Amino acid sequence: MSKEKHHRDWILRRCCGAVCACALTLAAVVGFIILVIYLALHPSKPSFYLQDVQLRSIDLSDPALSLNLQVTIASRNPNERVGVYYKTLDAFATYRDEPVTVPVELPSIYQGHKDASVWSPVLSGESVPVAPYAADAMRQDIAAGYVLLHVRVEGRVKWKVGSWVSGGYHLFVNCPALLAASGGAVGGAFAASASAGGGAVPAGVNTTVSLKFTHPADCTVDI
Figure (cartoon, helix red, strand yellow):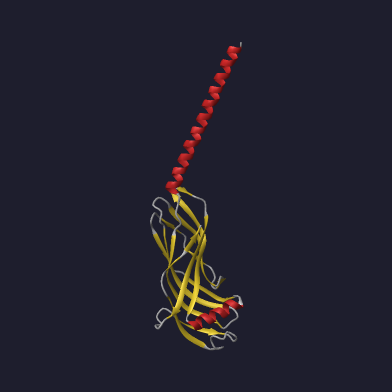
């Protein structure tokens, strides 16, 4: 009797061991497959570059701020196996973290493997309310001969592999745009007016200045 019980226990232990070994092997194989797919298809963030900025006009005579500029932004998909859908993209400009233009919607596009795309939106804002310190700082910057703006793009992207399309991911792009005084007025001249109290530009006086985009800039990208 004890011999039969011992034999049954031995068979049970062998069966349990075999089941556990199969489960561990299956888990290891599935994990390895997932790791290979992840390493092979894990998408890299697209690259963004600010190619040009044309500052057309700026008005500081109002307590708010008005300006108009055209920007050229390029994007490149660095992935060899993954495409990118750009959805609901908005572009706008900021100065010292204060929005100075209203958001402009960019066309939604699909970007294939290693492809590049270019947008050239006009960004403008009429009587955009800004903090008093920001308006004063911009007057001083204009008098000093330079203005540092930031062109931002926000929206959602989706990854495409074959016929599969991922869910949406938030996209945040920040491009520094340094405009500096230039001897020539081509592409950079505009009339700037300032209200009393600025100190840098006489009140009620329209002063023609020439600020031009200094050089193309890499943008930071967060997804």
